[in-house]
Length: 165
Image (cartoon, rainbow, N blue to C red; front, side, top):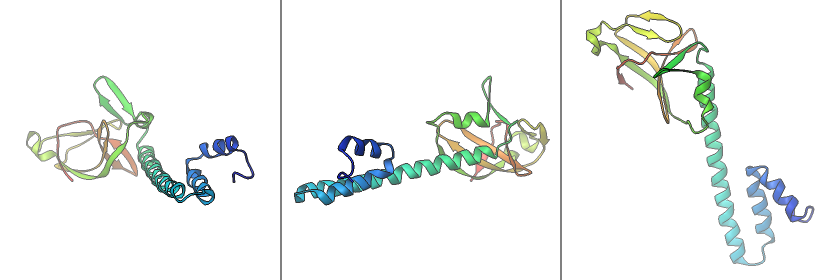
């Protein structure tokens, strides 16, 4: 690879794609003159492959988070103080990460003796129930409860519930 291109062109080519680092390091390891150089390149190659694995993991995690958010109804929102946070705003913060996604049973029976009315935000659909199955998203800065209605997810209004995962 170095024979066909000069060093600056080669470095620019590799810097554009992190997945190409192992290819460059392998080529350099093959042309190294001493065994200590070769050992250093082998260590660098292992580090580059580990870095690629971590980057792929983070990309997959982010993609899963975006897919879940796309299932949320566009009219649904989370009330955070005086702000209303909609689904698109959940993915706008690059540092916000999905820590957990799963199902939970929300026990409404423990709040106000079972006479609780749960309200699905955005839809305004009151439902009197004792236990409610919810999707749970735990993000780096929020815990989100959602109910699935006709294939769409709706945020559940924040009320103090006890959760059973």
